Image (tube, rainbow, N blue to C red):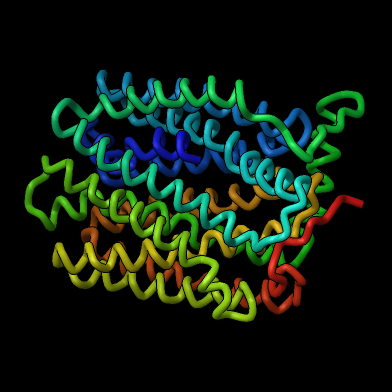
Length: 404
């Protein structure tokens, strides 16, 4: 978590500015991000199946190499001011790299906890992981903005690629599958089809899981847009388009909120009898906060609202992770989690170009109000998931289920 997030966050504070500096418009920049999420949609389930057949460690190693190579390709495209279609291809490859991580790492963690007899609350584990990720994000985002300010926008991307190669070496040495043994029953493609079919049975066809995934489809793109649009939005409010450290401040604020939110996840969970109730409250308040970010348009007031929005998002994430893991059997865990991530990425495919175009036409402020209106639509789907009465919605720890 520390190494991955440090590498990724080096460019989070400057990514949108980097794309705009390469000659892309707001529509093209967020369309490039949409191709990134489209790549995640396309590859999420196949790479999840890789993790469930070959192993979680192998999937992680493939992710580090793919992401490092595609990050360095981004730098090349920036240098040559490449046409949009090349950015689209490179962004899809970045999405491929992240899909090797998304289901595999979480499944690796949960399987190891079950195998070693963990009996505590899953929220506490995911919350501590989020704190570690927040610390790494804080360091990486501040460093990325500082480095870009004093060198160039491309240098943080190069450093990101190098950190990922270091993580490959660390994982190759230290990461092992615990509590999970891949089943290899004959031909790999036939095995992948078998696991994918079983994952549909334990994922999409389970109503509590299905409505949770639909909620991801609605809110996934709004969250991605809200984060990346804050970079040029704050620069606009600040009045200096070259103040990259202000843009890096966005990621740093969200990182600090992530740390506090990770610590708050377990206490917040105890306030609500059901996990879905906590998720509905956080989603509704988050939508209100996004609308306020778009309406206020005063720099330091927006910064304060970003803190609130980041806290709500960060505190709800471990609760959601504990809930969905409690609904999924171990054998299909990585694939179902990847399917859930695919739905979130699918939201990014349609929402980012829509919101990016709205920023071109009406400005960043109105685009946040539109994003808030989209985000609030997720609340009914969370309610539908809660109506299924799943045990994972109320128990104090995720249930260790095994495939039948």
